[in-house]
Image (cartoon, rainbow, N blue to C red; front, side):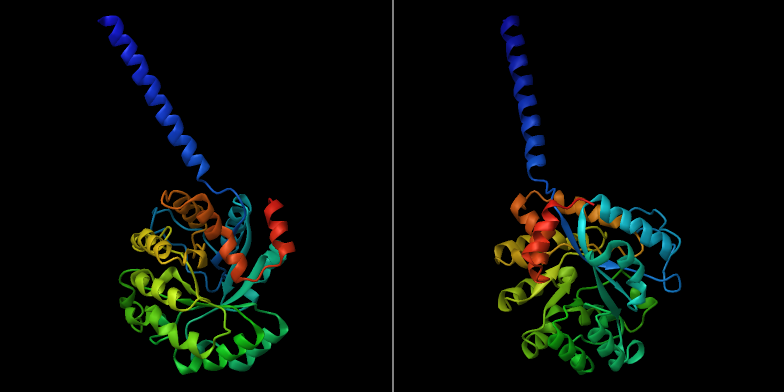
Length: 321
């Protein structure tokens, strides 16, 4: 009897070891290891840097200034084989030092909330024509108190459509309590449905919704079904505490609606470069996504949206910074 018990114990232990090994192997098999495109990064000057401030997810204090922010962010990009990035600043000059280091792997974006206060149309046209910017966004009209489809933006959409400049629009909410410091903020202006008129009136405009609508993720998925050229990123949902609740429900819905092939990876690291690593790990941990789906989110969908050449894609597949 004791002999049989010992044999059963050994068999149970062997079975347990097999299960643990299989689980570990499955996790390794489902981890993406190729190149990554980050569609949502921010650059600053020392004048407009918002820190230092504690990371809302970890409590760790941010870097002290824009120089440290740039250095830390670029080191993380290289570490994780992030081969292309859309990096926005309040002016093209804010991104210049990034391009000096990373070259054409950086797409220069223009961050704006209110063109009435921040941007002259003639200057914008000049920047586009001269190639000083190749991306218009993040467009955060929610912080200026109005809809992204406000007619004030129409001349900008026309220029972007004419010169094939991609556009990224903030959708969803922001950090809790923002209305106390920014009284113009209204959550309703983050509703993705407000972008619909832009999609209809400028059908050749390349648009993606930042944050997948967060609070309004269902509207984002429905818009993507209706408008086959509309893309989105999952920035902030993959690391920021009050937005993380929307990530899995949105991706599951996007998968159900068969629009997952237009969901792109982004981080929105703001003043915390470590958020990039947190965002990558969060997506890697989602067991309901297959390896192929992670590959599409991390790289392929953005490569298609950005119209990358076959040569550039081939280079990325063999590139390791």
